[in-house]
Image (cartoon, rainbow, N blue to C red; front, side):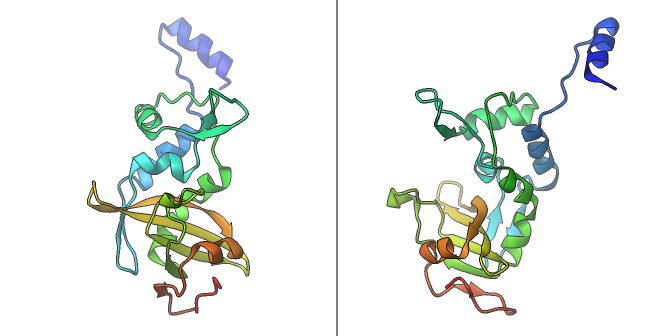
Length: 193
């Protein structure tokens, strides 16, 4: 049914027309159905919690900086997550990293069965684009491509949470991973270095 006809029909019936959810809302709704508050046992062992307040970072949800619209800034989780939960998120002016969004539902596999796990040398407190988290989980895809996931032991929550996950390359992992790995799967030696 085309949207214009749907709007006219809703008006004729005296009901408020409902806009279909946008792509960001659809990804969030799928997250809520399949991953919300999931606890994943990792080989360290760590019990890793997937919490909705980290969703904007997992998909790199951004909006233009009001002071300089050519720059993009991270969306504020405390603003967007309640709107996503309510199904009322207006996506106008926002963007996400499509590759992160596409890989979101594979994160449990990386956390359960990584090729290796390293201590994170790129802590957020370094001040040079660091990433919050104590451990970096790494999955190999070919000789150079890597998928990484960062976990953080949150002292306030008393939980280990997934902070971020994204595609990278072998060289970047070499620069950010403490060697040797704290874990290597039995099928492979760590090839990060």
